[in-house]
Image (cartoon, rainbow, N blue to C red; front, side):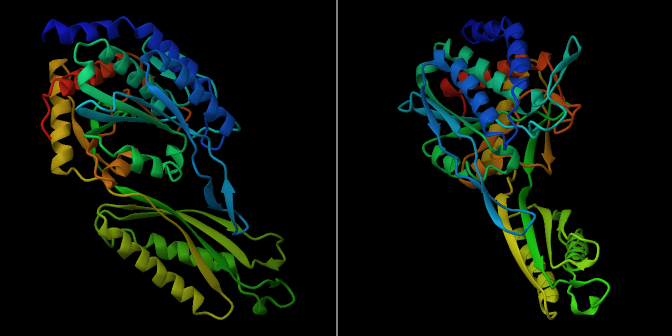
Amino acid sequence: MDQALQAPLDWIATQREHMVFLTESWSRINSGSYHVEGVGAMRQALADNFLWLDGIQEVLPVAPLMQVDAAGKEVARPMAEALSIRKRPEAPVQVLLMGHLDTVFGPEHPFQQPRFLDANTLNGPGVADLKGGLVVMLKALEAFERSPWAANLGWQVLLNPDEEIGSIGSDPLMREAVKGKHLGLIYEPALPDGSLAGARKGSGNFSIVVTGRAAHAGRNPEEGRNAIVAAAELAQGIFALNGQRDGVTLNPAAIEGGGAMNVVPDMAVLRFNIRTRVAADEAWVLGEIDRLMAIITAREGFSATRHGFFTRAPKPMSPQNARLFDFVQDCGRQLGLDIGIKPSGGCCDGNNLWKYGLANVDTLGVRGGNIHSSDEFVMLDSLVERAQLSALLLMRLARGEFQQ
């Protein structure tokens, strides 16, 4: 590797201590998706650390999240704001870099503080998903801006506040951000062995509000219409759809409703998730669910209303994505890394970018594991490793080495 490429990578190696400090510090900021003040504090921490890169910063509003509550009513939950940082929008190569500010751990969760398990392992909320990835992104850009090719590449960083709950409010921001971009880089954690997630399934979260008729459980139960029993029947039917179409999985996750033990419940909310392999799966599975609902509503005294939609479209290993993955793997080989690619049933903002036509790699963050649990950890040596990978990728893009 020539010295002009090597020098920024060597600089990253000097930043390990600072990268560990930032990851630990940001993990201490509670930024659960619904904790608006905490996500705002995280956004400000990122804005402060990106200042010296001299990009144009903009705080962007995110629409409230509409949800069905336990009473079957739609309510609006406010979301924190997103952060956009742009530099050189006139450059011939344009890249969108993304990460999220939120975690799955709200302020009421017992998992709040990071701790070192050993010299190379930090356990803490969001250390892998995705605060360590934000550190990787920051240092990669700092290194790239030190390179002689910086003028050839413009970039936009988009940090959203609601990825862990589907990016529903920030999806319009992504639709706008992909305009004029050549590719996307997203800093979700790599798979535990360092592999990249390749093809990803689509996903949607849904609720069905079932209404029946209340009655006294002792005096006249036959006049009641038990909404919980009907919702449970729907859950069984939805679960039975698993295995009926290749790659489609359904997970009934919760039933809410009812009250006093001597009252036939007249309302219940069934909540479930659907994963799809290809776009055509969406119409099939919703048609099957509507068929199951029609069986319930054909009975006197019952009604059912479906809420929700598919928030993530499937992301295939398309030829465009495959070429980009090959290029990332080649950058890895230059650094002595053997980077694998594996399909994933999970989804992320890479699904959204692909939906809007932008090829992307979405697991450029740290190596770690046990995400979304109190055992979440990051391998600290991966901070430098993955920042060097992204910096080399950006420099080679700016040198015109990647052909779409």
